[in-house]
Length: 454
View 1 (tube, rainbow, N blue to C red):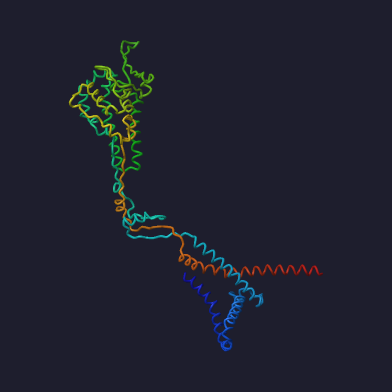
View 2 (view 1 turned 90 degrees about the vertical axis):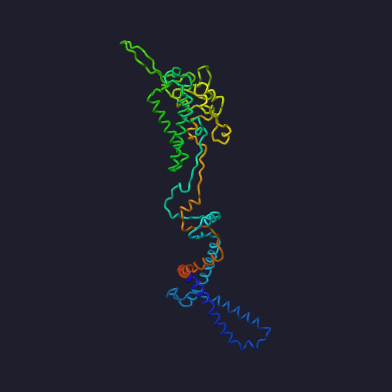
């Protein structure tokens, strides 16, 4: 920058100083004659003298020394070439300065501001600014997520109700006979205990799986946790069905005794049960054969939205929990289980609470399991705690600003030195090249003229 200013001042002084000295000397020589001129003609004389002087200065103005044009050129020609080069230099210089002014005026610049030991309030103020970005690198390379992220879980109402308690289930099924009660597999009272145990286990495992995932703060817990839980459940069901394991309720296979033709011995065969209500579905081929759950004694009555089938787990997953929202349905179950009428008293689930729930009352248990019985995953992120753990010691603010007069002037001064150096070398070379071309053309024309004369 200082070199550029020095170059500009030296050029200006080299042009103005000789002119000023000559004006002073000429004024001294002509002071006597000026006294004789009348006051009326004095301004006109000064104007004529000044215009002639300036015209001569412009005509004779030369920035280049004679040695710039080589030794093979006479002195007068060197002076002429110097004047021509000077005019060419001034033209290119003006064009270059004009381009630089336009370029500097319309160019946008990126400004960087550093703030040391920033506070949270300062970073928030910087973030609210427009057309800018803030970078505040942390002094700690790693920060545990639990330091600033908390996830509060909210489960379906069924998982916190009395229906998943072992005490209520045991009081409800206390009078069941483990052998005689299985004689009629179509009676829902034989599936009820399995369904309630399965529901309790699903809620427990879902809540445990969610809490384990949150304690580890796994990446995208809300997305991966339900998938992992559903995959584990599908694996267990596939193993049971693939190995043709018979349930204790004899709901998928039944033993049939047949005498052997070769001897007197009796052979027990395990034959798959077929549920006709689902288009003759055989439990030997698939485990999702279903039928409506009913109580067959003391009278035949259907149980609201509960199903039975090959496997208690599959049939319960296809069922809904609407019965637990209905007092009449709950009393129906209590009356057909021969349990303790006082210990089994329970309030129905509040259907009004489902208004703000993500689930409908008629949502299947399978859909609830896919969502891990989760109502919501509210995530609370404390920026204050994160900033405290991050503890940045510097914040850098970047923003784009348009050029101002000071920036344009600074850019011109910075590029002036380079522009003058380039023009000082390039203009004489261009003039010498033009002179060579002109000399070559003149020489060729003289040769042609001589040949025509001869």
